[in-house]
Image (cartoon, rainbow, N blue to C red):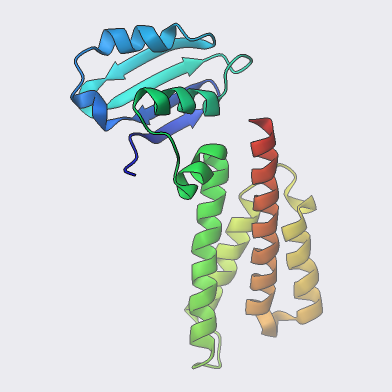
Length: 190
């Protein structure tokens, strides 16, 4: 099923959706009034030229998932793809962290493939270490107490600098586990 909308931007209390069906509809004022009449939705702004709908809502009454259900019903989208559900249930900051981890994982894979053919560390190995460090240090509040940072330090001390790709891989794996844990926490809040 083709998606009838996509989340362009969201912060607690405000969400911007791209809804291609808005370009064909002429009843924008009625649609705005309909959604504004839902308890918890404070303001609706439709911009048909860019196929956008901005909804401001009271987070103590309404949450993002409820708004998306109303949008789905109104625009006849009854189910999300698994990736859509993943993207809906996590915060934009967590999405950024997952993207960073995905890039780091890809670099790790390339470095391991290269390592089998070249024995000396090269630019890619150093890029992996920098990418892993940036990925690990770019999320959370107390960075030195994060499990992924502690894993990186302990594995560096125990494995040594000669096994820097192994250290980066262990650190990256713990980072992924931590992000999955953060995602579960954010799902519980919805």
